[in-house]
Image 1 (spheres, one colour):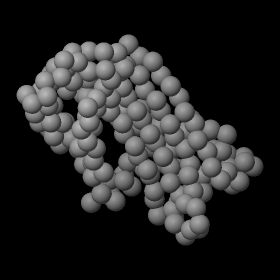
Image 2 (cartoon, rainbow, N blue to C red):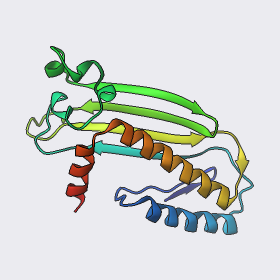
Image 3 (cartoon, rainbow, N blue to C red):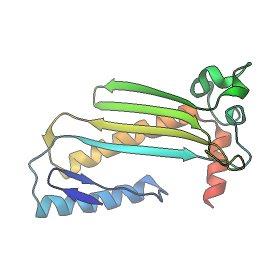
Length: 170
């Protein structure tokens, strides 16, 4: 957690389930509401940064069985596939209840050919319209943003990747 005069953030690197994160966030928002009593939110968001690495996956072509074709773009097949050393794309989306910045890309591990490459899926969901600081409204937004991020993630990764990630987590 980080608190400053104009911002509050809650971060975790050991994310297991949204419900656990939501519970901790709810406790934090209640404490902030009681102690600091902010009148409004200037910006509220949730960011899901996934750095995906799998054993034996070292090139963009190796990611084919795990990622949707839209993510792989021009590097998904053909002569380019085996020569891609770095790929990054960003999409900015505006929805009725907020915005999403969706970044994704292939990032090889520099200086270590034996280490697996990383595929980054970075989903930043937010609303930058001022709103009252109300715990239930904030939690409702969190629920919405979690659904957006999960839906976007699952629309772009294959079941094989989800199975591999679950196996790694055990």
